[in-house]
Length: 362
Image (cartoon, rainbow, N blue to C red; front, top):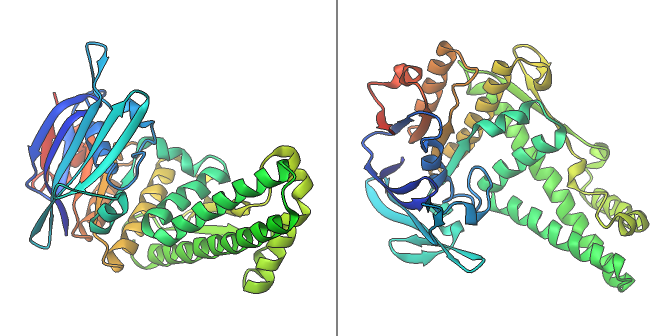
């Protein structure tokens, strides 16, 4: 079990200084709106993702006092795992307009990936609620981010496809070598194909987990399809067709200065299995429950792969009734991992009040 035993924060957003010993694997941060509850769990999310749970610019995370912004912040955790303790930390330092982010394990400078090999942070925040009712691209981006945090190879495929996409557009605009352009498109086609296949593998696994593991909470199904779905099972032929599509789109892509044929062709929809409805047609409460279930399903993948993780839930109780909240807490308890929650009202957490460690922000 991954467990933050101690949290020390210096100059992170609203927190000039915060430190606390944590005595439970369930942590509840309570306080009024605007008091800094989200900032505490957001400081933890930075260990997994370089932009944090809200994707803000790094220069906006320094603490400001008397209209003067600091140029240094630090977050440090004492992490317990299987009775072993490790100190993980990061620093942000701003010099002129440049912000440098540095990660450390036991004071030794490391990469963000090395931190992730120790522990991952999985989160859900209120701004993610729109995933269930907005267009397909936001659903696809949500799934891609979760898969990228789970699977470094998927993340690399996305990065390589973007790299070669940018190079292709530059060649088209500048009238570059046609032979090299063909080579670039062949490389893109391979990464394109792998991205589509890996999405489907993870979505299939999520659907199985929903069916078999989420016994007392909302069951969901994710559907995914695209215009080349019928040939995905024929790897070499599919890659060849992707490459041909890129070739045929050269004039259009040169004109609009972007790749019009990409892995974004996938259309992803979420369904409520109980209602047999697309999430976009569900009530706000049902949409929130589906979203929570997807996060739980991803957490099950982590657990089955024996990957250490910690859950971060910001204001998850909105639109969820008391009984479903209790069911949700019971599902989280099955992981035997630490979970952090924020809320304005302690009554929301009655089901775990005798087990949780409460942080009251005034």
